[in-house]
Image 1 (cartoon, one colour):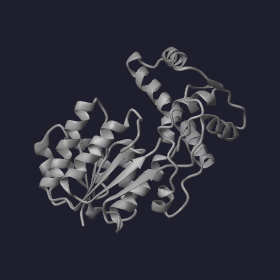
Image 2 (cartoon, one colour):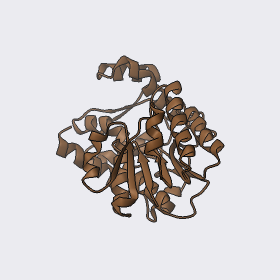
Image 3 (tube, one colour):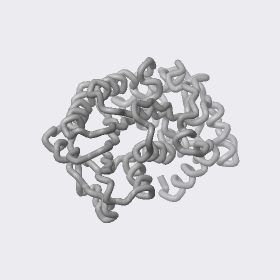
Image 4 (cartoon, rainbow, N blue to C red):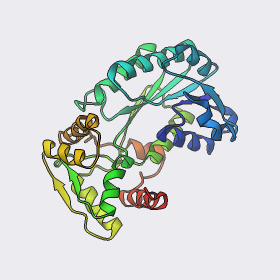
Length: 291
C-alpha cells in the first residue's frame, strides 16, 4: 500500500508525515509538495518526494500516480482559489484511481454557519461526487492558533476576546496528526465523518487554565467586535486580516465550534491531550524558541 500526504511541509502535514513514519516503512509513504526542496528532511528518511502543485494539474497526475490512499490537507485563500485547487487535486485522485481520500475539514462542515464551513462543505461535496471512499476529518480549533495570546499573557498582557461564552474544542496539531495517521493506516474508515475536538471550553476556562500553567493570574477582557478589532490593529495586526479575526470571534460566540464528540479519543485510542498538558507544551516551546 502506498500513502500520499499533500501539503506535507506545512504545520499539520509535517506532523502527519512524522507520525506515519513511526507506523509504516518509509517506502510506503510519499509526499506531494509545491516546493520539493523544502521536503529534503523527509527524503533523507526514505520518503518519496513528489512535486505536486494544486495550481498545476499536470504535476498532480505524476504526484498521485500509483497511490492507494491520500490525505488531502485543505489549502487556504479566497473561495475561488481554494475551490480551484481542491477540484484539481480531487480530479487527479480520480484519474489515478486512488482508493481512499482523507480530507481535513472543519467542525460540523455540512451544517455549520461558521464562516469557514461553506468552503469545506463544498470541498467535501466534491469528494463525494467522485464515489471514492472517503473520511472527512473535521478538525476543531488548534491550540496553536492561540500562541500570540499566550505569548502576550506570558509577559503580563490581558487576554482579549469578543467570543463571549462560546465554547471551543481546542486540540493540539499533534493529536490531529496521530488521528489522521490512524485513519490512513487503519481499516474500516471508508465513508466516515469524524468530529475531532478536545474538551469544550469557554475563553474564561481556557484563561483560568493558562493562569494555572503560568502560576499567576491572567486577566481576561471581554469586549465587543469593534473594540476587539481596534485592539488587534493597535497590536500590529495588518488591517486586511482584521475582518477574519473578528469573524472567528463572532463564529465562536455563536457556537460555531461547539460540537460535542469523542471521535478524537476513539481514533487515538487514548484521551486527547489535556488542556494543562497542551498549555505546558506550548509555553515550553515558546520559551525554548524565544518567540
